[in-house]
Image (cartoon, rainbow, N blue to C red; front, side, top):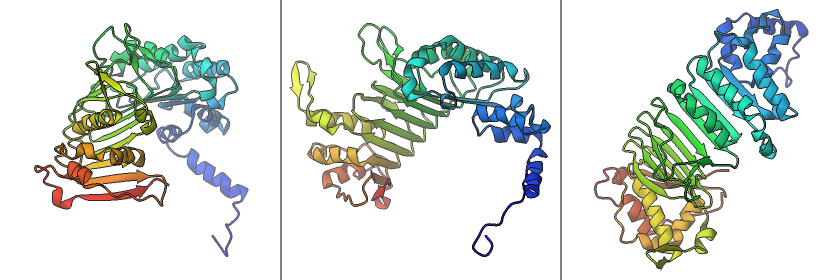
Length: 371
């Protein structure tokens, strides 16, 4: 800024800047284009002769339905961009996003959209990252799983469904990610399987030796986790439809939990052996099961909704032994800056009272604002 105003850039200066970008090596230009959507990537071919074929070797496919007026045009674009790329060009990353208000379109040309895309990825290099947002889970999984042998190099997987569900086994647990030994980052949003004979969500087992970061959001299934190297877990369930199963996460460093549905719990009762259990006992039992799985966490972040549930049932924790053996910091995330929390002694003792916790003298409780 000069004398309080920004200097004017002349056409000649802009031309020189453009020339400097064009002078970069082609592999650098391709890496830059990995950060924009594929429609924009193709449009760079109109800039000048230097850029005419750069997009054909970009190792990322970022496909966004919102960039097109209709699904057929989007599907045609996907088909054309795949057929126009260099045969030798590998694919390291695929990201496709459909529209929430166009959910019915997900079933149109499913084989062309998903089948062609995954066939291409399986035959062109080692796929490292896959992100599917607002998609139909059944069709995605139908065409993705048969190619699992080609995606064993997958490092990041983000699956976000908008409605729909996946057919599961007749009985027993689903272990859908066992065939991806290199998986380090996994995100599941409204993504679940159903038990064929009962119409209920099938229990899910998430196992991964290399798994480091895991996000589970609104998955109405009992989730069992076996991830000895997991460092970060984010668990969110707005209406509290699911449960937390057995967990083995000895390396867990940070856990972030948001469980809402307090009103839903207040109006519900579970039946156990013909005997009705009060909502308070249901809530306490589910939370204790969840915290048992998070026993190795050093930092535990609870949303204010979850902490309010804990406050309302804190007496249920008075005689409980703390499962946390390494907990150092308890964080309450609030959406209102004026909101204050005073942790009851029963909860303080539950989180920090384990005698084997060597971090006890360094523990702290803090409230942070999300706004």
